[in-house]
Length: 264
Image 1 (cartoon, helix red, strand yellow):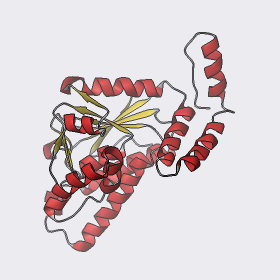
Image 2 (cartoon, rainbow, N blue to C red):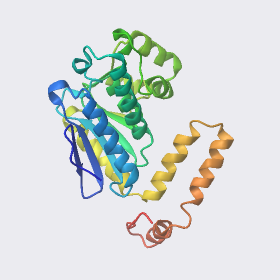
Image 3 (cartoon, rainbow, N blue to C red):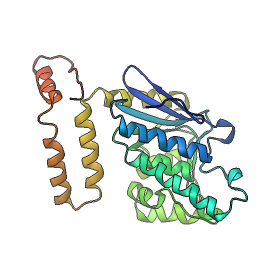
């Protein structure tokens, strides 16, 4: 898969943790059309080449903005037909994030507004710097959330709190996001990436097939009645049984050593 982009920085370390940085700091990492295309293409690449990384961290360049949504300067004067085409790419982008088979952590290092908040919500979980701020501001500029914000925020914080946030467009703090259950951990600004990398490395050290099957089961189960979700879990579990990693995990436990997983 490609690691060369105009608006993204992609690095994969020895622990197979990929760090993807949205890189338009002069615009607080607002998404122009090119960034939407590149985020889509990058995550499609991880879907195709699932061995490229074992865990992914998504963050923003600088210390002020994670992503402030669509670049409204680019949208000034945009006619309806172009807007529709751009939003079709937004849909592809957010689906690529939500469908990513590799665990995906948002490291929110500043403003996560509008589409930026929706990008964070599309990740598996969120670590946030103390100064991070979140908002779904779309109704204040004559549109509404269109990158699954009306779907993912209620699932994270509950319907009533999500309605208040979406219908007012008012921002909320990292501390409030943690209190509501949207953010998993609030970190000092200077330790955010270290803490995100630490949890990513811990995930990456586990059996890759097991991790991905467990992620799929949780995602699917959130959309199904409990009995149907459990049936899906059992099928996902059975796919781990014939793997080399399952045998290695049990052997390593009994030999009192760290397992060496191969994703097979």
